[in-house]
Length: 218
Image 1 (tube, rainbow, N blue to C red):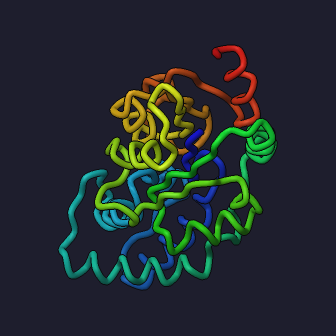
Image 2 (image 1 turned 90 degrees about the horizontal axis):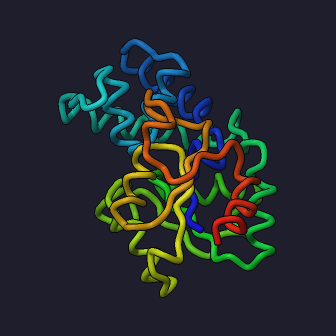
């Protein structure tokens, strides 16, 4: 069972938005509301910062501005990782049941490693995960399937024995490219797309539903 983090297990958007806007204010750039930041999350901190600076999904700010903003955001977010963030209802319950049922659990996130273990530890869910891949651990990020394939190699499992649970197009595309089934949560950060349009095999309202789905689908 491979889980995304932001938007799937933890609603971290409030703290990301606070940190992003503090960065923008220091650079004398206009700030963005929480919903806009939610729509931009999902492709790693670097792309998020570029979106905040340009106001465009694929915008490219000047390199020197980007480098300055990137370092500034990382330093600010380092102090705001878990101020207003919260686990989604059912996430802890679902992880607990899957762990008790002896599933191998992995967390694969585009979030930098600098922030990921502290966030997992803050909510006491680091103990569930046997494997962790963060956004700067490899040369690629989701939606590149290599990230999920790395987990398969570490666990000696085939794509048919693995399931991706996420909230964004990056998660679902990675699963599809890796030839594995996917669950998409109905909440989270869909980057402005309807959850039905993401192409997941199953749509769930809570991580707590996953164990029952696995029983019913074999």
